[in-house]
Length: 266
Image (cartoon, rainbow, N blue to C red):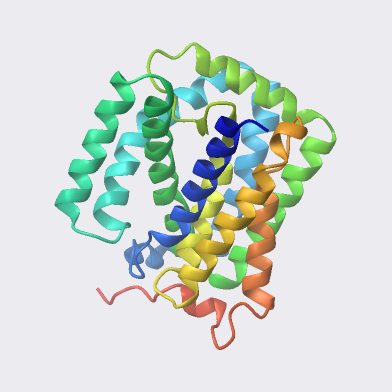
């Protein structure tokens, strides 16, 4: 493994850990009024649509890339205003600077800026899903998502869909926000959303910092395997950490249902 690949792996790992560390405890709490177990289907459904749907209708790949490009700036703005902890004005200015750099810079600087913007967009989606899904159903959605991801990759279906998405992204002028990547190392949109779901799940609780560090460490170790494996299911490490949080000793004295704040009274 070259030094540049090592650095790229670490940057992507830190990015995933940041998605766990950044959300405020009350982020998007108003969405709790729409809470329903049905929203849990969005997690495995995103894998099915992004894989099987792309293979059945190849033009969908380009449509998904365009959708990510159009939605990411808006989702990033929502993240800066309603999700990320910190002064909102400064955060919005930082987001604007990232947009400019991502559009004008090339090489690792441009890739890093685009990756951070993509991750922030995924942060909004992940935290929103946590607010929409009842606490006990979040883990079920995560495990189903991971199982489908592993199965599709084992069948060779995931690799074909991945190739179509990569090809579609090459036809987009400017940065494509369908994944986060530095050099040869990249992580897909669903993987980032799943890390953000974990961040929303533990937001505002003492376990949040430990979960963020654990995600960074596991993602780094898992990423070291990428140069030696053609494709690895990026949902697996996050799903394992979810299980540790729910049933392991990582969260003594903390209940999973307490991770989702009750919606404010109208």
